[in-house]
Amino acid sequence: MKGFAMLKIGQIGWIEKERPTCGVMDAIVKPIAVSPCSSDVHTVWAGALGDRHDMILGHEAVGEVVEVGSLVKDFKVGDKVVVPAITPDWNSLEAQRGYSMHSGGMLAGWKFSNFKDGVFAEYFHVNDADGNLALIPEGVDPIEAVMLCDMVPTGFHGVELADVQFGDSVCVIGIGPVGLMAVAGAALRGASKLFAVGSRPKCVEIAKEFGATDIINYREGDIVEQIMEKTQGKGVDKVVIAGGNSDTFAQAVKIVKPGGRIGNVNYLGSGDFIQIPRVEWGNGMAHKTIVGGLMPGGRLRMEKLASLIQTNRISPKKLITHKFNGMEHIEEGLLLMKDKPKDLIKPVVIF
Image (cartoon, rainbow, N blue to C red; front, top):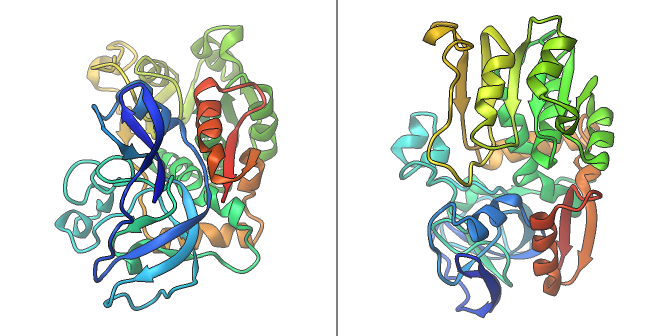
């Protein structure tokens, strides 16, 4: 089969590989639509996961089941499914502890284009099919459903990690597709003042549609100064970090109130350490909590998030700014995520 791969750090291209084999609890899926992600960019060009050779990229796909293992109960050939980016081993001890995304080791629930070939291919393998596939619900466009694989659950997980409550003032740092879904999630959770930090016009437009009350443009001045001015020096209750770099944590600590929480879902592709400002952290005693997490995967979460689309609670189709027809356009979509033109939020490639 044909697949689009990371050949080595900094190099991508098409390769031929054997079609994956199906275990007794697994499934083989052929893509209907896929979406390149900034994580793919970090993996290839920053070498964030270390060197990978001839590894098929991609972790966002909806598809059609073409084979199931003999022990798979709930899915059959021909089913149209959402495949989350995180596919845990659900019988692992880590899953039993409540951290399925780390089943088998830290971040090991993230298998596609990390430990095994990803979804940018004619076929791909899904482990533990009954736990990791979800049927595309009636009335949900498969193209929109691609956003359920990573963008929606990751953005919402940032909101969960920050523990946004009714009436909280919230700042979302970074309003790419994940940050935009964090804005939407914070609004659903009952945020009052909702600051969105970003500068690209299309992202700003959608942030406002999703519920942002204030836009903080980092190109127009220090975001800490802007937030503190708008909050009369008090800061915000909660912060979601969905973009930036290792220095962003210092900004988040400075703007969150004592007793506040910072939820990070930004994929840090470079740097060895993050800096925490001592004074603004109350010399270590300000009860400012920082939590970083990989999104949960799994069938139940996909089904619940899909129901939010069905009931018009969220509209992730607004993230999709570029559509391509044909597998051969995967490279074009990936390079868009690398270059980030002003009109881009998220590309989708339809097979």
